[in-house]
Image (cartoon, rainbow, N blue to C red; front, side):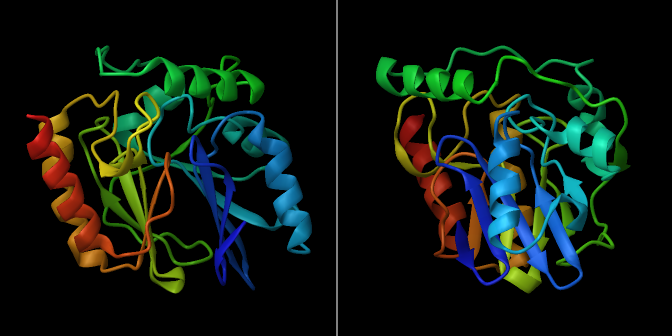
Length: 240
């Protein structure tokens, strides 16, 4: 699905994957669930591209619902997979998220589980090789993606800012659809290792000044970074 020229999404509001498409090639942001592989190929075909046009995959963090087809893309097509050093072990299955008991409603929970099952979400293939990044880099990839360290959801969470498509990809730095409650709008993401740190880290996004704020879960937000941060902060105060 095209969001704007050069900016595409596959998946849906439950789990999303993004593509930056330029004349030089394609950068993929996150790898969703294993079953998103077919959607990736279909989206590329609609654009007159194929998987060989992908120059790099950037993971916003190492959770299983973001690494889905990453190893397949790396192993079968030689596409480098970039992830913050703080989450490299997590993406390889060697480090697990902290356990928590977030609030939930049975309907949205079952909807998430059903979708994950259909997309192979419980058959994770972890990475065996990654290219580690630390934040502050501008990668030599289509869209000139800038890496913003965004610790909190996980130690190595990042955001990815691409001025060429006026978008910042935030992974689970925030969500616009809580997968366990169904609540919509910018808010803290569930299963966050350090909620206070995650909230503080959002201040690092202000310099991006992008129109699009694109989470790993939820509807694309097109009202700008500052408005998204303000909404998350207000939601966080209400929840206390």
